[in-house]
Image (cartoon, rainbow, N blue to C red):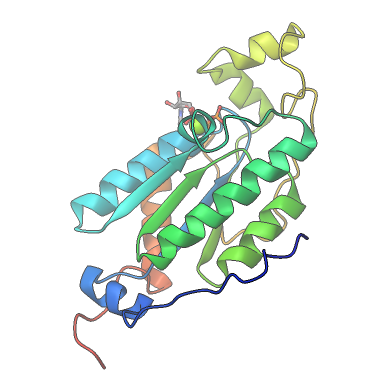
Length: 206
Ligand SMILES: Nc1ncnc2c1ncn2[C@@H]1O[C@H](COP(=O)(O)OP(=O)(O)OP(=O)(O)O)[C@@H](O)[C@H]1O
Ligand SMILES: [Mg+2]
């Protein structure tokens, strides 16, 4: 790992993360959706975003496509660039969580070591959610026509076809989107966050 530049020093103010969390009446967290293309990461993340926003929470979604057009536009899909993509997103997500925001990320993030790196960056507020639908189901959905292109050899390094997907061994949550409805998946995420205490923070200092 590269060393930080010399003569740089973190500058912390007097307002703490806990102060922001009291203001928002929630805990910052990173809900990291991982799974094959077409498994439903974006769809479930948007449903959770709506559900929690309706309940008065501050939520923000970082999604594969919008990040790759900006922050990570210089990166491709080879192994090294995928790793760098996830590292950058991990740091951004950690900053959002530090701001007190419930941050939902929707990236295939196929490699276990990359996800572990983000877990290390974010710390205890990292919630890994495996959006788990069989390849055949994802390929049958093919909402962006990507599997068809990948099968035709038009997309190199396509996860599940010509590049591996390493499923999480112990995710905090597993959503079987091939079997359960979107509403059931979104409710399962909300219930998990509630059980972790993310959704309930007292407005007064204890
Ligand atoms: N139970 C379900 N949960 C989530 N999505 C579902 C479900 N049933 C069907 N779908 C459909 O599956 C598709 C999932 O596509 P989505 O773009 O969310 O996948 P993704 O994991 O974000 O893929 P990518 O990695 O390519 O961005 C959508 O068209 C959605 O409507
Ligand atoms: Mg998506």
